[in-house]
Structure formats: C-alpha cells, structure tokens
Image 1 (cartoon, rainbow, N blue to C red):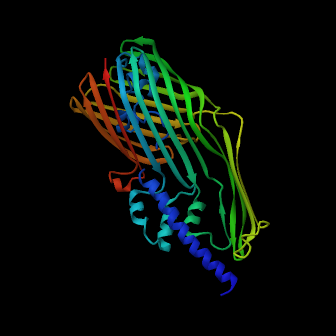
Image 2: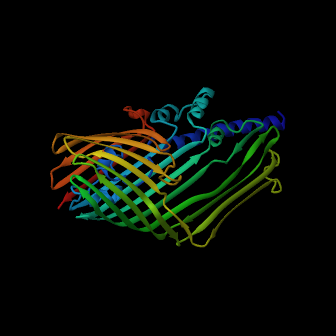
Image 3: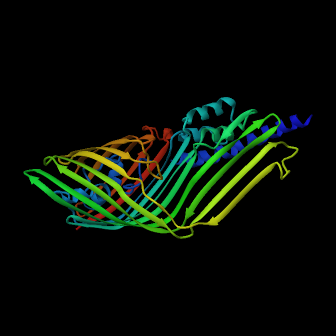
Length: 431
C-alpha cells in the first residue's frame, strides 16, 4: 500500500473515532435541555405562564418585570420572597429522541445526513441560563430584590458538525466563521420604585424604575475566531486564530425603566426596558487567551516537521475592560380580575448576547382558579431565535404564604421531542 493509501485509511479511521466521541459529548449536553433573556427565570408563576407576566407582576416580582406596576392600585404588596430558583437549557436542533437514537449507535451515512439536516444554516446554537433569588422584599411602592444570574450563549458552525461526523472530505474546506460564545455570571441588588402620574376613575398611569448594583462574578467571551482548513489528496493546509478574554470579578450598575396603564379594573398594559443603561467594569484576573495555527500541505510524512506545522497559544494579563448587559423591551397586556387571568407579552432584545436574542418573542399565558388555593397555569412562547415552548404549573396560595412550581418544555406535549427544559420554584410570605 502506498503512502497516499495509508494516509487515506488513517484519516478515515481517525475521523470516525472523533465523530463518535464528539457527537456523544455534544448530544449529552443538549439532551438535558432559553428564551430571550435571563431575568425572571426564578418566578415560577411567570414561567408557568410562558413568561407573559408584564401586566400581572406585583410586589417583589414587579421589580423584575415592570417597576411601574408598583405605582398602580392593587399591585402594591407587602411581602417577602424567601427563595426562588430557575434554570433552563436549550438548543435549536436536537431533541431527546435524537440523543436516544444516535448516542452509542454506529452512524450510517443516512444517519449523519439526517443529523446535519437538523442543524440550521447558521449553526448549532446552545443556550443555558440560571437564576436564584433570596430574601427579596416589597413594601408599598418600593421593592428590594437580590438575585444571582448566569447565562451562556454559543454557536457551533455547521462546518464543525460536518467535520465531527464525516471528517473533512478531500478537496473540502472547514471554516470557523460564524461561531461565537459568551458566558457571564453576576449578582445584583436592586431598588425598585413606582409612582402614579395620573388617575381618572378606574384608569391610572404610572411610571417606575429599578436601579441595580451589579457584582460581576465571571465573564468569558470569544472576541475573535476565524480561519479554517482544507483537506487535499496530498494532505492538509490551512490556518486559524481564536482569541478569548476572561475575568473573575467586577462591579457595575444597571437601570430599568417602565410605564404601566391600568385601563380599567380588568385590564392593564405595560412596557419596560430592562438594562436600558448598564455598565460592568471587569477588574479582577483579566486575561486574554489566544491560539493560532498554520500548516501548509501537511501529510503523514511531514506532520512532525516544525517548518510545516506552526502553532502558538498564550495567556496574558490585560487591562481592565468593560461590558454591558443587553437591553430588552417588554410590552404586555393582561386581564387581571376574575377566575381566569390571562396575559400576552411581546419581548424584543436589541442585540445578541449571553441569555439574549435580537429576534422578537411572543408569549401568552393563563391562570385559572378552579380551586381558590391551587391555581392552574399554562403558557406558550415562540420566537426569540429559540424553539417554541409549552409551559405549565401550579402552586399553593394560602393568602399569607405561597409556593409555586413550573416546568417549560421547548417543543410539544411530547417531552421526548423537547429541545430544552426549564424548571422553576418560588416561595414567599405576604406581610
């Protein structure tokens, strides 16, 4: 067997091994699994209603969804949220069924084509978000909220998945273009205030704001990724560059603004801009990490030749740098009285980022009080660059104390077809 034949056989065997290992790892991550942004993940009532909560949020939750609600009659509550927690993970391509079907299996050519056809042109997007709140307090038209959030958004190009599954065919090119990744974790302490501007009978107009102190915990962003490789009959050639900046601490601020209009005893509309202004200075362990590679007609015969394969990686300290949280607008209308409550929200992010999409998302939700102390809730949301999500939940409301729980399935009523899951639980007391 000649050198070229040896090279081809080694290349195919290596590609099959890499394909199986990488696909198993990726699908394992995806199978356990957001929506357009990370705030409000821990409000189980809101999650159960698909996130349609702008016109219904009262007390502590008004600080998260629309601080202007604190200026409306009937929306002020004296209460303490003892704990709230929510987490979600989602992707835009694969379901739990896909994971069960392909993990551990010997993939045929048809299987690989089916997997690649499930990935949109823009690539495999993975989102994960989590939020926890504790001891948030509301009294009158003021709310104090304390929470911690973590969010990540990444995109693996379709070329990368093709390389994992098939290897690079001869005379084919693999490109890094279009990939991105950002992750952030931070804690906030916020003060929300709402005040009434105008009242005419049952109609009432109010405005509100939430000022937030932000404590950055960790940040990672791919600032540059480019390049690729071509597989020739004689070997490989190509080059690429990846730069990442990281930090493990920082401080900053954020400001949310909102307005609410109570049309009658039954209907309320509102609009809010979350993180209309925000700024975080990352000043602890700020570093840049880079990797560069270049190879020219690399074959099995010259792979160890330093003059043919050039690679360099580094980590170095850098100056403090700044980032901002993406601005998100919410516009909502809600029916606020009777046994059946309902709400519709339109959500629009203004840039792509960790936990945020620049594509609009619409959510609808309902709550029915068949049993007064055990409401039933359901919701649906679509858009935002994510899969559609069905949600539901319930809870126990005894007046003085309450506990809510919710689950959201990023697909249909069939959980095996889910492309993501979201769980939330919250509990508190009214004073």
